[in-house]
Length: 300
Image (tube, rainbow, N blue to C red; front, side, top):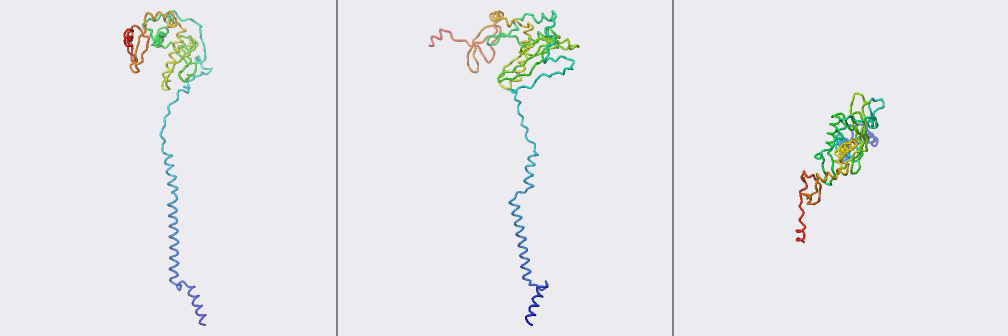
């Protein structure tokens, strides 16, 4: 009887919450709090060791969106200038001077134009290079053409792409003037505009060339190549033909040029150069007077 009551009392205490042991309830609460605290600590530790995905991704995206610094690369002109002449359509009602030889040697120039082209060169217009070569400045060729045909009545047309080598540039041009065309190894074309395109004539074709010493000098060399082509085209028209005559050159040098000793003012190197008799030595050279032979023997 006593055992059954004790058993009944034990079941009653487990079956009703109000009759449970208060100490057991407190222990369960403490255990639950400990579990929650440990879970929070674990999450905090994971957050500290693992980089923030949003922050980690935002930084590179921001960097990607920032404008990159512009890097300007100088164009390498030694690879060529990509300046091929424009090829006209066959239906165009004009002469394609890049390919055509239209009007070559079809008619002589007028008497007035011929006289201007073939006029003797004045000695004061001729220049002398330090190595003794005589030449006519290219601007004077243009003046002769303007006198013969009139400004705007002649022109140079390229007949090919500019070729750039390691030390020089070259290009072919055609000279077209007063409805006539002429060809030479240097090819700039000279042409005249008239109401009827068929009146244009090719006069001469020639290839120009010019040396350069650094890539920065290529544009200037290209312009010098054009002037060289113009000079060679004018040679076919008889302009300044004396400068290709050996007898004229020897006489001109004897009458109008002299050879002098000079010293370079920076390097102090001495050598002989040719200048016109009415000209002066220019910087960076200055006149150098060699010691006399007698003084040289005494020094020895």
